[in-house]
Image (cartoon, rainbow, N blue to C red; front, side, top):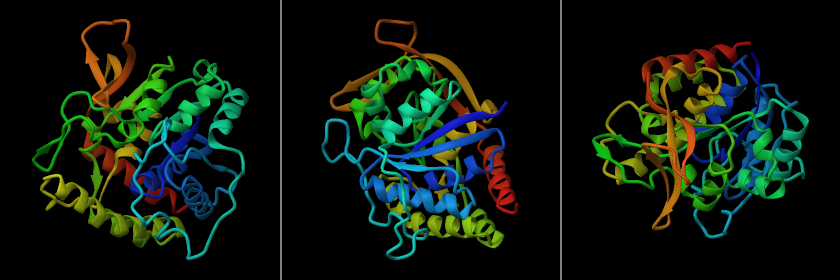
Length: 318
């Protein structure tokens, strides 16, 4: 069965969003109807998505700019300064629709009774769409979210405290609204995504494939790798391994069409804000503040890495 999806993303910072879009475009199980962009300089992010779609020959898929600040304002969103580098030429500004991403989400959910959303960035566009039309929650067939911190989040010999999950924690109030809205939810958490990445040999394969899309992806990974090493090295992680880019968002996207890459458990999760930090708290039994969610708690990282490369490198040859 083909699944009709909208990809809601903060593409153009961490390269895994671009890799996620490439996987969506190369997966026959999915019909990508739109990309909605969120985050600081959301129009720039939509232009990056638009350019990647064009490089893939998918001018039929629109990319909408959405929320530029968190739900209650503030400066909780990251911008690294390299947004668009390796993808957009200097001065290039692809046209994007004037319709706001939140309005597009509402409209598309009314147009497609089977619409699913894969959210791999802050949830502000979705929270805003729910404020526009609370019935949206009843129309979305399933929401797959890259985010959450349920049990143990560790990488490179370092265990992270709650708050490491950027997607949900960068706009805690939007996450609280969306995860309590009652949509069927699949969480692909930081617990498992930090176990998945591509290495230098994979980047070389992307580059060697030689299509406009894979060349742009490879260049973007090479821009991102030193940033990733600086961030995680500064947090106390051993970054001497072969990790060019994590596959956080591609793993979440893949689970929308094939859950077998991960071990999933049906859990009672309480979305909460504790001392200003958004939490996805596992509870032993249903309660007034809990919601049933399908949560990834393990991953076959080697199999998923192979699947990702086979899809993206192979698809780019078509």
